[in-house]
Amino acid sequence: MTIKQLQSAIQELKQTALSDATPGAQKHQTYLGKKGKFNLLAKKILDLSPVDRKKAGQLLNHFKSELETILAHSDAGESGEWVDLSIPGKKPDVGHLHPISQAIAQISRIFERIGFTRVRYPEVDWDWYVFESLNMPPDHPARDEWETFFVDGPTHPDLGKLVLTTHTSNGQVREMERLHGQPPIRMINIARCYRRQQDATHTQMFHQFEGLVVDKGINIQHLKGTLDHFAREFYGPGTKSRIRPFHFQFTEPSFEVDFSCHICQGTGRVGKNKCRFCKSGWHEVGGAGMVHPNVLKAGGIDPSQYTGFAFGWGVERTYSLKDHLNIDDIRLIYSNQASFLRQF
Image (cartoon, rainbow, N blue to C red; front, side):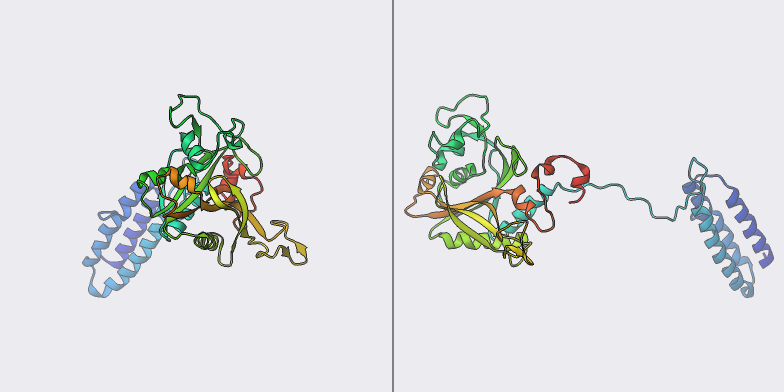
């Protein structure tokens, strides 16, 4: 073979590739596969004299680039339009976790890193665990059917009616029972809760996380330190917590918990104007307190030997206060609007 004959063979193979209507992948294999026409032609370079092989190599390299371009622009569509197979394909739509699932995962990691154990207790539970064991008397407003979803079913002779849990605090006594009344306890319980109210800041089904620590010598300083740690980890450095006296049946003393506003850095003002987001420099997020002695007794723990603290509030409320979210109606989170959920 001579250089002239090689050039002629290249031109002929080029024309054949241009007119070949074979589907793209098969066509690529025919011409550039391991046993394809190009490799068969390239092997003929051995028939050339050593002087001509350099020139032949340059011709073959240039032709291979041309052949790749021809194959990339093969007619692969039914419409007859040329398709460039070298263009990166369109990535398929890939979903992601719901924003509340993302928040739950982050909350779990924050507490697990400081020794809390994630637990899970029933979301449909007996009245005794949801109310009675938590020091709530029979006439407490929370036990009214206008506040709580009661399940139409048999009544337990000792534990009462079945209810959809109004909070995650039912896990407190259950955790004490699980450990047979033997502290230490460092629990984080995250679950769905149900209450008969719905508006811009409430939904009839929501998520709550409950922290419980019981051991010897536990005091309010331990509670405050834990709240400060969570505030910094979840909302960012510089965020602080504040506790205010309040009343809950299952803690004594009890507190409302506030976190400093991330918009105004806790000052209550943006420039010369009052912060429109918090109006005071603080956001109310939930409740906390020292575990009531009656609750410890219900779990089989001696309150003269052990003390503990508990805290809990809504995941949706906590998440909606994150910087840059500005969610003014938490019902949107469960609206199933794809345009809304894609933002997270």
